[in-house]
Amino acid sequence: MEKTVRILTDKYSIKSKNVVDVGCGEGYFLNELCKAGDNYGIGIDPSLPKTEKFPIIHPRLKLIKTYYSDEHAKYASDLICCRHVIDELPSPKEITQLMARNLGEAEDGLIYIEVPNALHTFSKKLIWNIGYAKRSWFTPTSLEALLEICGLQILLTKTLFGDEYLGVVARRSYARGSLSTDIQESMPSFLRILDEFSEHLNREIIRWNKKIENLRLNGEQMVIWGAGMRGINFLHLFGDKKIFPKIVDISVDRQGSYLPGSGYFVNAPEDLQSFKPSRILITNSNYKEEIVNHIKDLSLTSKIEYL
Image (tube, rainbow, N blue to C red):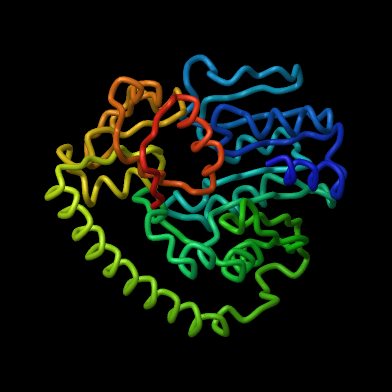
């Protein structure tokens, strides 16, 4: 996130500008943009809590609980951000066109869009990242094509967070609707990737069913660490409280809630001090070092495995 903020503020001179963040969540990203560039920020999100959990500290930032619409063109945005939103909506084209319209007539107005990177997810066979909330998946080529169809010119396409995400910076284009690349050229190789992904998923289901049976025969249990998409998907498929009695997460927002599908209650990691599991399955190895250190701080001697 820090790298993205730096690119926007330094490379594209988003300083003392008007920034709108569509689907801003609790405003963390927008707050960082306002701090780094002394910008004016408007965050728009229909799911905002009644009171912001994140301590908004920048005086030029305002969060609005509503759906994004043509009405928000009045903010005369120099930059419109939309991170991890268009892939969860029924019509990514519709909201992208809306953002393009709301840029107004400013020639230097920019749009920044960020989504999961389908090329990385499927080629690396990250089967546990495929969640119920995702309605669309974008490769670099298909995301660029969408923006170009919506009348935008691509300035930068970049992979983020270990290639798991795509970030694209674009501006208004005078050649509306034209495509700079032929999306059909990338289709055969990507279809092969999807076939390999499906085969890998089937093998993993067989492997985990065998592993679960071995745990059962040996009278062992395994605690799940991480209640994000990977933990949700894993327990939706294999949830069995005799084998996987608990799931924990460091996020206080997730603690005390229930997972969709499996109905598991999310505990705090500190609860494991009294439970003392023999095995812990870390669902997201991107946080391996942080979680392993946390496990050591809890004085746990559990065998650690990774999903």
